[in-house]
Length: 279
Image (cartoon, rainbow, N blue to C red; front, top):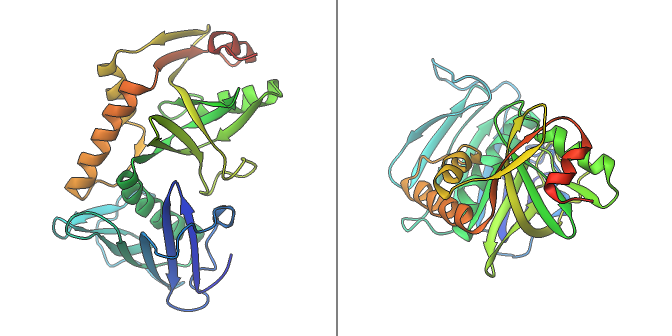
C-alpha cells in the first residue's frame, strides 16, 4: 500500500486516509487498491498518527476488539480501545465531509478497525449498510447468509461455491448493500478477510437468509416484523451519532420490506442448493 496518503471509493463514498508521516499507513491491509477513488473531493478524511508504543490512557478497556464509544456532542463521538484513540466528526447537518483523527498503535487491526467504523457511519448517507454476512452470486444475483456466531455463514457460502461452478462467493464476513435505482445491490467489500473474492463486483440482492444449523434443509419466509428484528442484529454500525442511528433504522426498514427475507435451516451438505433454487 502507498505511504503518506491513500484514497479509494466504496459504494459511491470516497475516502482519503492521510498519515502524519510517510510510514503511518504501512499497516494498511485489505484490498483497497482494487477500489480506485471516483472523486477528487473526499467524503471521508481520516488523519492517522501511528505510534508503535501507543497505549490509550483509559482505565477500563472494553473487551477487544470493541471500542469504548462516547458522545462529544450531537455531531462528534470519541472512540477508544487499547490500541486506538480518536474522534469522528460530521457537519452539523450530518452530511459530508466526515472527518476522523486517530492515534493508533502500528498494527493492521487498529487501522482496519478505524476504517470500518468510518465506513459504517458514512455509507448510510448514500443509502448503504455494512452487514456481517457471507454471500454468493448465482445467475447474476446475490444471496446473503447471516446469523449468530457459528451459525455457518462461511460454511454455506464456501460449500456452495466449491460445489457449483456457476456459484461465486462474494462475501465471507462483511458485505455492503446499497439501495439504488429502485433495488438493493450487493458490493464486494475491500476489508481484511476478503482474500480471493471478486473485488469491485456489484450485483442485485435476490434475498437474505438467517441461518440455523439443523439435520435437514428448510427455507421459510419471515414476516417483516421478525425480519427487521433479525436484520438489525447483523448491521455493522457505531451509532454514537443520533442521526446515523435513525438513518440505519430507516434503511433497515426499507431493506426488510423490499428484499425477500427467510430463515434457512440447513445441514452441512451442498444439497441445500435445492431449497435455494441453485443448480
